[in-house]
Length: 280
Image 1 (spheres, rainbow, N blue to C red):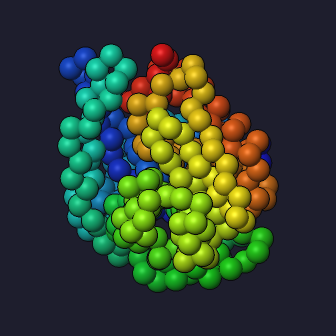
Image 2: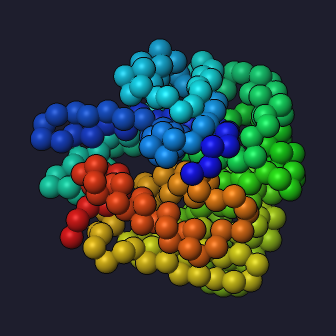
């Protein structure tokens, strides 16, 4: 695996799972990314704003993160909590009321981005507050560096904030809402051109993925021995695996296929249907 530093920016959400009347907690969004990078022993720096820095530091201490570093900025707002019910390996979302938080250290975060030597950048922006406008501007400048490979998993409403990123990871619903069209080879091309992206990884739930780049489209199915429960929720984890294992912007089919297999195996071995997969 690559030992090159990876810069991660975005939201930390607190995922709470009800399993056999017991609540289990884990950090989601950017938290999903660092969990994967830890297992792959990839060096990283996570920069995030979080309403309760003491809580996130406690989670990090308990999980004994060793491969990376963490910078958290205090932010206004309440802790974002997403609740799930796990029943016989199948996860159902109960409640999701993320409240946008305002980053109050935007200049400092932008300075970190500007001075970063990382050649891989991962953005996980779903709480709509973890990254400020000045930081986004610094990111767009960073994306122009031909040596930088950037990956963005965000809400449809702020795709344009990350204009020029190498790869975007939309769901089909996000794609349709942003472009007003169903995913086709022509519309995938239009999506890429609008965002000046190198390519698109379209997440299609239990139907796997579509990779589009340079006029070429490749379809990837979930391996037969796995059952997708919430492949959308595993999108940031897939992004982390791809970022850790690739050395170029050109993600060949073998890179995607290996990443999907590694993700499926990881989730199954951990018995975490709540994270995306379980045995058939």
